[in-house]
Length: 203
Image 1 (cartoon, rainbow, N blue to C red):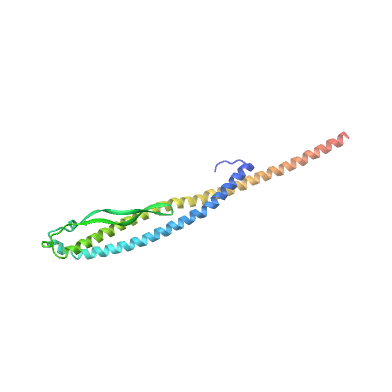
Image 2 (spheres, rainbow, N blue to C red):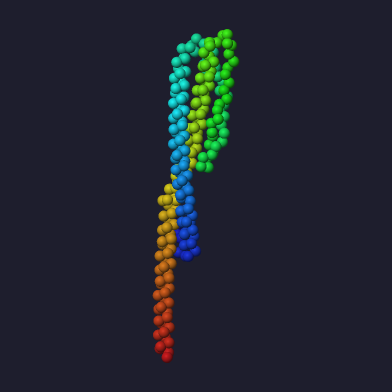
């Protein structure tokens, strides 16, 4: 703990600091709760997306035998171009928002490719979209968890260090000032008593 001055000026500074910490702490606690709620919501949504992705993969696995006879390899049916995202904000944290993917179906000869190939292209595009959405949700959660860690550290700093430190400093300064005032009164009385005795002696 840093050494403090036992003065009325320092007492005011510590009192002001305590009020400031006590004013900010509820806001930090509220932000912490909000971030925790957002993480829970993202985790739930990510679980749903992962279930849909697993279901899509299961459907696709059922077609593996058909791909063996196809002239076009499964990974060539759809060309993945990229993920589209927008910028969002949660409790002051910038996060990506999933908007969709850019995927281009391979041009197919309707006379040389099986009829189910169109459906396979649509399923592959859906699978790519679900994977991309899951990746964006994981990134959202990662960014919010980082902010939650920082906010949690600040809450702990205020609750366990700054506020108790200010309260202790205020207590110590008040005791010191009180002792000084008491000592000054005692010294004043002693001086007054001596003055009275001197007057009596010279009278």
